[in-house]
Structure formats: C-alpha cells, structure tokens
Amino acid sequence: MTDPALLVRPSPRRRDAEATRSAILEAAKKQFALVGYDCTLRDIAGEAGADVALVKRYFGGKEALFVEALKASFGSDDLHEWDHRTFSHEIAATLADSPHVDEARTHRFQFLLRAATSPTTAPLLNLLVQDRFLGPIREWLGGADADARARVFAASYIGFLVERLIRGEALQGREREVFIEQVSAIFTMLIALPDSAGG
Amino acid sequence: MTDPALLVRPSPRRRDAEATRSAILEAAKKQFALVGYDCTLRDIAGEAGADVALVKRYFGGKEALFVEALKASFGSDDLHEWDHRTFSHEIAATLADSPHVDEARTHRFQFLLRAATSPTTAPLLNLLVQDRFLGPIREWLGGADADARARVFAASYIGFLVERLIRGEALQGREREVFIEQVSAIFTMLIALPDSAGG
DNA sequence: CACCCATGTCAACGACGATTGACTTAGCCC
DNA sequence: GGGCTAAGTCAATCGTCGTTGACATGGGTG
Image (cartoon, rainbow over all chains, first blue to last red; front, side):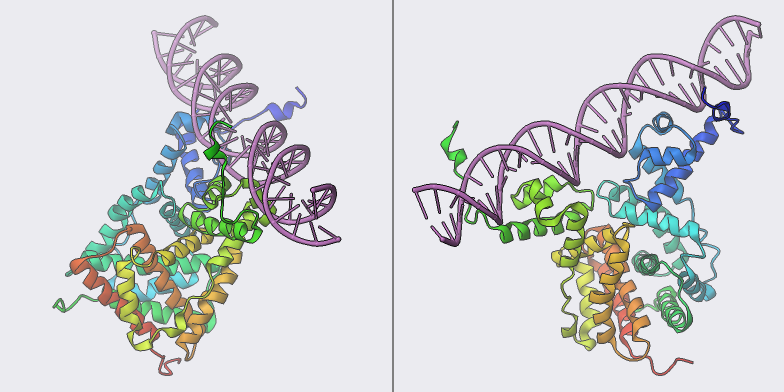
C-alpha cells in the first residue's frame, strides 16, 4: 500500500515447482561450498529467490538438502576422455592456473573439503568419493593394485588443490614453471603402470 | 547443603589465573580440531573445568580464542632433525599408519584444515603456514627454487594427510606396501636437488 | 466461470549459544 | 584480622536459525 511498484513481482516463472526446487539446489551447492554447512537456509533461499519454508517442502530439511546438494555436485568427472600421455602436464597446468580457471571445479572441491571435515557428513562423503571419484580413477589407471594407486593419485590431486585453494591466486613466472614441472613428474610417475615390481 | 561432599571442591589449584587460562586454551585446541569452529564455548569451558564467562575474561571472545588456539597449535615441527636420506620412507610409513600413530599431529592438522576452509581465518592461516610450515621446509630442502619446491612438498604432504583423515584407519597389507612405495618415491623426487634443470 | 490443489508467503515457536553484568569468594597486603 | 582486588560463578539477555503450521493465491480443470 505504500508504494504500488513494490507490490508488483512479475517473476517470469511463478508457480514453477521444478524451477524453484532446482534454484534452491543450485544456491545450496554454492553456499555449502563457499560457506560450509553453517550457512543459513535463509541465505540459500534468499539467493534462490524463494522462501525458507520451501526448503522444507522440497527437501525435507537442511541435512537432506545438504545430502542432495552433495550428490548433485558429483555428477561425473569426465575423466575417461583424458589422454594418458598428455594428462600429467595438462592437469599440472590447470592446477597452476586455478582457482581462476575452473571455478565450478573449485566450488565442488571446496564442498568436498567441507564435507570431509564435518563429522556428520564424513561417512556419506566416503561412499560418494568411493563411487564417483576413486572408481573412475581406478578404471582409468588400470594395471595392478589399481585401487591403492588410485588412492595415492587422488590424495596427491587433493593436496595440490588444497594448496591452490589456500593460496587463492594463480601461479606465475618461475614458480609456475617449477610447480608444473614437479606436479607433472609426480602424476607421470603415478600414472605409469607398475612393471610387476610387486615383490 | 544437601550433601556436604558435593560442596567440597578441594581443587589443587583454585584461583590460578594462568592455569585456568591455559586449561581453556588446551581444551579449545582440542575441540576446535575435533569438532571445528562450531563447537560450543560451553563444551570448551566444561572440558577445561572452567566457566564460560572466563573465556570472555581471558580471551575476549570466541573468535579471539580460535585465533589464539590456532597460533598455539603451530609451535614448531621438529623438521630439522629429519635425515634427508631416510625421510621419504619414514614419513610414508608414518602416514600409512596414521591417524593412529601420531594423534597430536593429526589433531593439529585437522585444526589446520578447518581453519583453511573458514573465510575469516584463512588469511591468518596463510601467514601462519608461511612462517611455521613452509619456512622450515624451504630451509630443510635447500637448493634452487626452494620456495616453490617447498610448496609442492607441503601440498603433497597435505594431500596424503587428507586421504588418511578421510579414511580414518591405518593401511594394511598390500595396500600399505603400495602406498609407502609410491609416497616414498614422490618425496624422494621432491627432496632431490634440482640439477640446474632450470632452462 | 467456479472449484481445487499445488505453489508460494508469512509469522511465530522453540532451542541453542555467545555475550554480558551483577554477584560471590578466595587470596594477599597492610 | 580487615579490606581490596583478582578469580570464579550465576542467571538473564539477545540474536539467530531450523522448523512448523496457518494463510494467500495462481492456474489448470470440470
């Protein structure tokens, strides 16, 4: 009644349950990644342009929303299309230039880290990582002890991501060269099939 | 006056400000590491056997306590006494058997990870890591590009720690062998002085 | 057009936790 | 021993957040 203009809300898609739900989910993925589990539902709903009550309606509660967002964040990393010969250098360069280059991946990773450090979500994450992360890597690596090697591979990758995350800025100059050189060497070593050096 | 025994609190050190303060700090270090920033001051105070209000008196508030605890958690890792020749294998074995082996180190690391994923504490952590972690490693490594190499070194180490943290249990059997073998190889590579392969 | 259900809005509740200030008490100095 | 200050205790306040149920409304269906 104060100002007529404020009452007009000609949202392009009102009454669209699916769109609303997915908007909430997207906002949740972002907030959970950026802030962590301690972000508020009001923030999530606000960013999605929806009401808090809809979170309950569509997802049941905060924890369920978190689980949903976590699952949705790990669809499938297109690992299979990486070439074994060029992978090492390419991934090293990508890492050196992140987090500026691949923002979506960075968000997903932050999400993963936060989930890993939360006692309530850690078990869930373990299963998820097993399925959507370790599994593909194991297959992609192939060879003997693929499972154990996949874990070392993933661990190294995570370590470099953490480093990039903490630094926050892309590497440059000589430092970038050294980084790429060493990281590339590590991945090359980890990709290489073990020539029956088992025992 | 219900039960006289309950009224007797012959604490060995009552009215000892310093002891109380340090007890709170110790409890904070533990809780912040185990639970994260979302632990309650009541929990911390309770574990320290002190009152919540004393947290304010001695530290000013929760955030200040967190910062204090973070600083106190990174005294000095006795890195200098590691032997370059045996380091790789020893650290790989330690990692393979953690977190059961070195609980204190695990706690400190959890603390670090939590701090890294908190926007407010991340800058502080950056400085801290620089001083108490990267610096010593850089010196210990020596040689050309020591700074850049130290970062890769630290990143790898962190990655393996994260993996161990997520798994939660020590490695065994063949998996342990492979892990030690590969991790050891990585560290050996990273420790090795670059033989003027700069350009 | 009228009905009805799905969608969206709103306000309030209940719990929890950090913070605060007033109060009590122990230890020390004179 | 008396008082003064530091150390410790307690209860209340304030804000926030997840949750809940009642209410409004749009839009398709008969």
